[in-house]
Length: 267
Image (cartoon, rainbow, N blue to C red; front, side, top):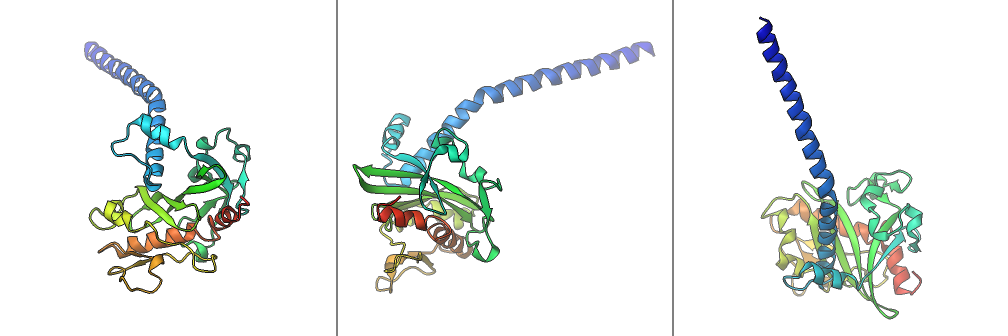
């Protein structure tokens, strides 16, 4: 009987020792791989920014990506005033370290969106956003803006790039979503993304975004076709979500005041 108890005790001890050993191995691996994971996430973000801006070389190496991305200024903008703010305003030293999506969950760094104004279905909006500006001397060439909002099954995260007039879309792309492959997932289709190039955000009064996703496609002789993009076939709710989130972020609730300041040279 004593021998059986001794065998059970040894088994338990061995199991505990192995559990501790493998826990240490897993924890050590997670800690050691963290810098690599962050580096890869940052590289992927830069790739998506360049893709939206039409500046991603085919088969670009990490070095090429870094070289192209270095042409941008990374800046922080107060969404209420449309003016740039220092990184210290959001408790970071480097704008690249600022996470606007994390800030959106902090009541001190964000604001709740009233339900009737929450077109993008995101509930909270950060007070400060990170933007990517490309200039030639003092002349604005491009500005790339982070956007996000709910589709059918998921929140879509992406970027929209505007030309130097801060009104004409140069490109749009989403880097994270869980929409249905072959339907809402067609937001990743290069042919559909290409339809956004040259579309105009604001009407003649330059106050309200007028982007529309049109079910069945945009007719060549459609009125105001410069504001219209073909909706995703068979993905009505995802299309509506994309239309809503783009218009939300380019409205007064998002980047509109900042873009106005850019156009007037007052940012």
